[in-house]
Image (cartoon, rainbow, N blue to C red):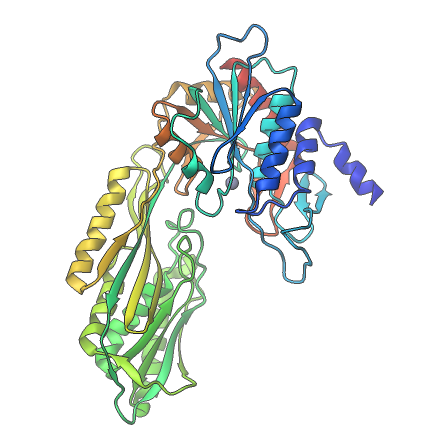
Length: 487
Ligand SMILES: [Zn+2]
């Protein structure tokens, strides 16, 4: 144990790691980060900085320029203090009370059986280390530490527009050294809802479940362009083809579990003449073969199986309503809608058919649309609404959050790239993410604010395999200091 502690004590740069290790002792799952935010505020006050907390719980810190840099433009450093709480099966850990147990493996830092919280604890620690530093000749500084990022960018949404005075913002919430993130998508969630009339099941029919499983799923931002199957789409196609052919009656349908995940599993409860079950099983097998050919190595494990349902099913949907629901699920947009004309390989606009649930005479379909272009999000929702009108659904649109449109030629992007090249003798790679970042929301409330996002190498964030490269944190620290001096 002693050896482990010593191994952690010797990490460089010391102030950054000291802040990170101290922060790791304070439980800070999303929505439960008040103690961690208070700790951040205390650290900054102890350094003599001006500190305030807003109604959302975000911490805003100001530090004057280093001597001689008073005329430099004000810059904000921004990170989120909350972390995703995931643990391995069998790991005993209470995220409400227990400190994260940080362990070192060579150049990697990880946690024992849980998420590490390097996302975004390293960003918070880096911002505090800049505040503590006497060596970095920075201009006027603002540090914004937000709360509750991981559960829907809640802290950023609660930030009052115009809070920041800075003209530049460095977001410290990216996980790839050598990459500069310059854009992200905005999002708009919507629910399509429809009442369905029910009627008594045909006498003599038997209940079966058609199940789609074995798909990879993945994040609806990061994985939407990776060719993966959507279990609800696969199921809808099966029902669309096989319901008329086999006289299926639809009793219920269910699939997906998270708005921001591509659905991996879906199932329909159907009734049919028991004598036709073997034929239906064969037909599902044929569809499975078709899908495997279509998905290929993108998603090779898809299965379509027929299982006998346990309990008897008294009611089914009226055939016209059932057909409308299946038509809607088959036709509603899912996947990439447009690629970015600015950054190769980046998705600009996409849709995720995320969930479907039917019960008590109502069908509810959860959708999530993303785009870095605000109007494209709205256009996509309009397209879904048009389909809703055709199929008898009502569309309930969420409020949404704004994206951050990439500007590869902005002076800030050019400056950070040039500093990177000067420090490491290699160019920085420019990228944008189809996921959400707080920059979109902060930018909306601060027109004209120039932003970039950067960070050290991290892998498998949001899982118990999360790890961060110690050497890349040292490089990140060097870059951050150099950028602040060059601004
Ligand atoms: Zn993060």
